[in-house]
Length: 144
Image (cartoon, rainbow, N blue to C red):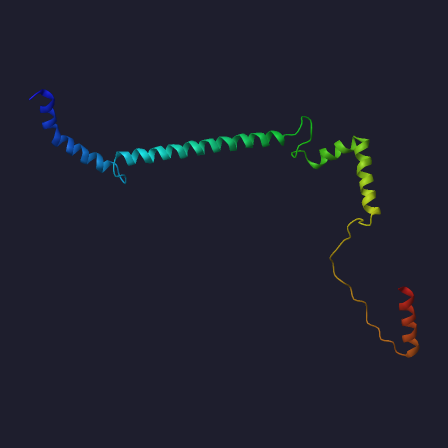
């Protein structure tokens, strides 16, 4: 026998034992082909998710660029006092605010009224005579 066939004959028991160890290490997969197939599908899914993540990051950057305020514009961090001072410094802004206020008042919206509180009942007075009842009625109708 030549050297190759001798090695094959002696390697068969070791090879069989190695195949059993590999089969035990494959976990839920029946064979190496099933493992490779699962790996390929996993790799494809990973690629799809990576591409989707990149698209979302680009959309987020684009949306962030659209919402940036121009240089020198007041930001939300300015307090009310500094915004008031900016508005007072510009006559056009003051006039526009006053015009809007007057338009709202003349349209019938008006300033908001104070709501709440308690009602104070007036003292009950019963007329003692018909003459007094007539006087109270006339007083009531003249007020309304």
